Image (cartoon, rainbow, N blue to C red; front, side):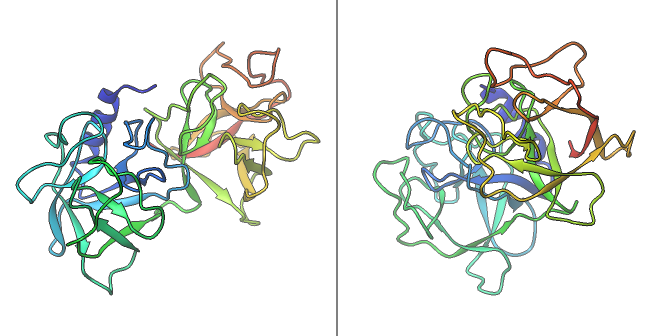
Length: 304
């Protein structure tokens, strides 16, 4: 598991930017948190497997400021009320390493996702359009007294679908979210950058039929007779996946791309083959390690 020091470095480094993405909705506690493996009040770590990518602004002329990131639980909490709220990491929120974020507030014309509310018990920002969520102060969130907040969602200046991550344990490309890793436990996406894939684009150059597995969240090839074994049990499930196209045997396509990525014929996954002599764990038993036998060289658009 990535250390909280790594999470802190990532958020602090990005906090200097006026626009910061990689904020996520946790489907267990319903709070907005910075992407990382921090403790959730509902137990375990935050689960952002169904979340989009939210962007926050740390400067600007309109909105409500005094929103800050807690380095212990990773959530966004309001600090303009005189005291920090209770934290699932113990004690109260620690916002000492955070920028001052400004949120769009009570503006019905603002673009983005509505139904975000302030919880007066834990001071966190929580989504009020679905699961009420577990509050860090106990029970459910209480939005009495809250205004209406709108968040920017899934902006992607690069084209394609972003928020794909490299897992340092299994070396596979996994869609951002914690799930079963062939190396045990959840995928580790820190210190990965964000990768973008061409999806459902018939004009894209490269090899089609790459799919997302709903169970383990990795990218795997769907053009083989077998879907391949999944780290979460059984075979990969592509039932809700788009059709991804990867650059294949294209040489060096430019500085925006990272290669060599490889296909494993045993589990059908895409894995990082840039560490000489290192073949990480494959979910297929008893083989143990990924194989690059019969694989070409794949290049993926990468935003460090």
